[in-house]
Amino acid sequence: MAFIIFLKGIFIGFAMAVPLGPIGVMCIRRTLTEGRLRGLIIGLGAATADLLYGCIAAFGLTIISDTLVSQRIWIRLVGGALLLYLGVRTFRKIPADPKIPINNSGILRTYITAFLITLTNPLTIFAFLAVFAALGLGSDLGNFSESALVAGVFIGSGLWFLSLSSGVILFRKKLDLVGLGWVNKIAGVLIIFSGIIVIASLL
Image 1 (tube, rainbow, N blue to C red):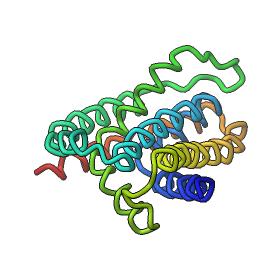
Image 2: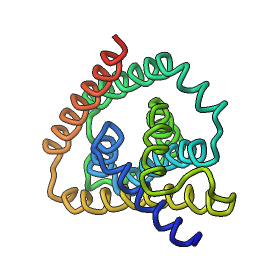
Image 3: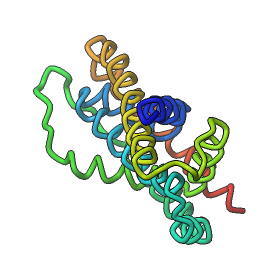
């Protein structure tokens, strides 16, 4: 029983991560310009946030969810501002020569950034609740089954970003500095646009 729930969790985590939002754009851009590891770290940050929201939904932590939802305006405002900042920074970033070995410093900062951006949508909790209910994963699950469910969500989300970065890395060697520069500019515009949408949704 728990194994079936675990598999359902993997499916949910994978499906919830698939829509190409700002995190997906960041994962693609970082993979193309800085290698697969950087893209995977972004995916890990996003999967950790999905794990947290999945835990809140699965274990029925209503106090936390109610607090997050009540403060969603400020949370999303901060998230939108962060996306605008990252978008401008990405747009202006000068790409490194792909022939030069990649410097993997700043991995923790990359992880935290992806984690925080994913957290800026507290309504994700309700999305998890809706999907859990649709698949018959209600509040009557035991603690072990709930743990298996959220572990599956984390793995499923991580699998999507592993698949995404693995597919994108195939194109990295085909891009020169000009191509990588365009990747930064396009990704920057998309991230800025995402930030504008987040802030505009509060009006």
